[in-house]
Length: 453
Image (cartoon, rainbow, N blue to C red; front, top):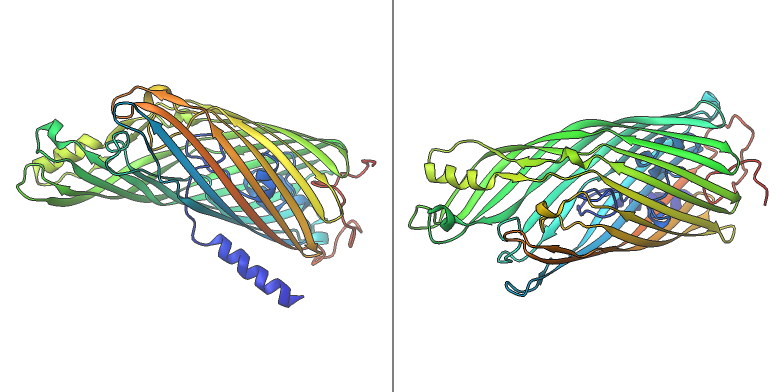
């Protein structure tokens, strides 16, 4: 058995390492709520069905029900393309590179020591991210950012407690680490009377901050469950370098310089309400409603350290301020799963999100719009200790007709993703309190005693 488990542990460790960011499913904006194949396979409608280690990120109350020790690794392969149509400046599109977003989780239930009521967990994922890139001479992205990035991860120590058979609560702190936030853009030096040729500025910053999360699970009856999830707002103060490259502003030859920069990155509060209906042990349905306070993302203001040369100061001051004025966003997720055989579970779902980005502050850097996705997934119990899950989804973004300066055009965005999850679980590693050792739950999600077939 150990010969089988050790390679699985290596695979899970490799999945967790080397995150590459991109925004995908979430509350719009640059949220990336890609946690596991089971979560995405049911249309992200999982807050009332937190039955896997990844529940740490969407309802930590659920880990109180996970027996023994469980280790989960997930790899999300996400591809996103944005097309721009403009009869005057021409058509263009983003590069659409494939990005890997890994996540990893571990949960521990000490069993009889705490009467099977306590769950401990630790997770690492990337709840926000951004990776968009266009041609450097793209008329729409040239001055707004033709390369944009937010590379970050979050560490989530978690504790959950089952107060009664019907009510569980879980949560804990979250440590956000922003590894690289910024972008690359040109600036029109001719417009400021500084020179004949556009220059280029590159911004790189990093920082970290603490937040927290809370989840509640209520099993009202054997067939009906309610879930609630809260994530706190976080303002991450980042600092780094602003580098001006290949500039001829006020000089006869190319001039490069760099200076210190810092800014505040506002990440929104989120609340999700969920209801799950499980008519039989093999089938369950769920609907979630989510709200995110993106209105806090009003402005992105880069504070620049002064430099000796007045022309250089003029260059940096010209690009450091960008109003956002985003609004709150809402989302609806629906999903279902059915245990087809003892080993195979099928899943499906859909979500719809209203974008937080208003028309007059649209930017190709975050080409978001109202969008709908359709997802399909499957889970397979390889053996007593191992489970594999797969998911594929397509997300269709509504067209946006923009006529603002520099970014005019019709934008169409499309994304798709494939997710694979591997979970190793040792359910009976600790003595159990309720005498259910060796009993395998038939339910596709949370085992609900009293539900008849």
